[in-house]
Amino acid sequence: MHILVSNDDGYLSPGLAALAQAMQAFGKVTVVAPDRDRSGASNSLTLDAPLTVRKAPSGYYFINGTPTDCVHMAITGLLDEKPALVVSGINNGPNMGDDTIYSGTVAAAMEGFLLGVPAIAFSLQPRSFEGLEPAARIAGSIVERALNHQGLEKPYLLNVNIPGQIDEGNRDPIVTRLGKRHMAEPVIPAQNPRGEAIWWIGPAGAAKDAGPGTDFYAVAQGRVSITPLDIDLTAHRLLNDVEQWLKSPS
Ligand code: MN
Image 1 (cartoon, protein in one colour):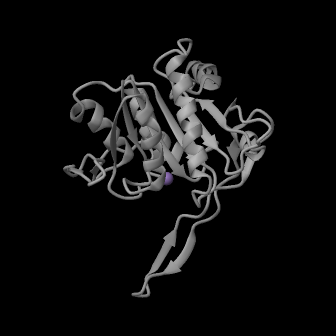
Image 2 (spheres, rainbow, N blue to C red):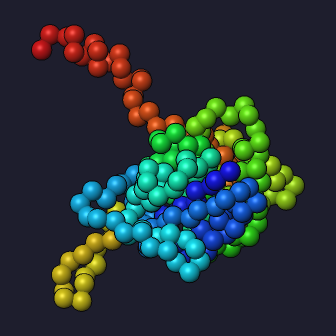
Image 3 (cartoon, helix red, strand yellow):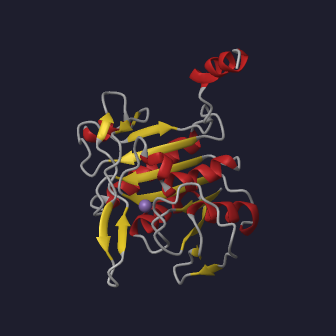
């Protein structure tokens, strides 16, 4: 059993080390991660520059590319066998609702999924990495259960969010759907040392669709949230509308 580990926080992230360590129990582990923090990189591939692979003293491979580059390169060229599983994380901060669109953590897992490999993304809610050790144990137990359960149709893509404070009375993960956020906060204007105007992308919006059944709700309750994801972006609700529109006189 060969497990590929990646992330979007970069190869030096404590979350990556904790996840890679937790995967040792299941077989051979290869870590291929970006050379720096690429959070928010989504599913981008680097097409305008060559990529290099270097090996850190930790044994981890790091690439001057995106999370998607890392998993793509690992599966299509670097590894001598197709991994049984891709895991990504443990991310510094949650990836719930709309976050999944922008997330490099989810994207790394998604690239495995797109290449036919089951994949799981792990994110830890507190950005302080508080609770990282228990989170890594939870990741290990979820991976063990996923690998041992035959009923899960492959490939699957799971988005796991782990709260900083787990509800001790109910440690079992629950299955959720993605919630939704309010519109993002505005960009933040500032000035660089040369006096030129610059902007920082503002924070994500607060949770909006966050009721029972959503990832936001589960994590707020101290529960580990597992959302199965798919990638078909087709707006099925609009197929008929568009068909009617195209048939209508112009
Ligand atoms: Mn990140």
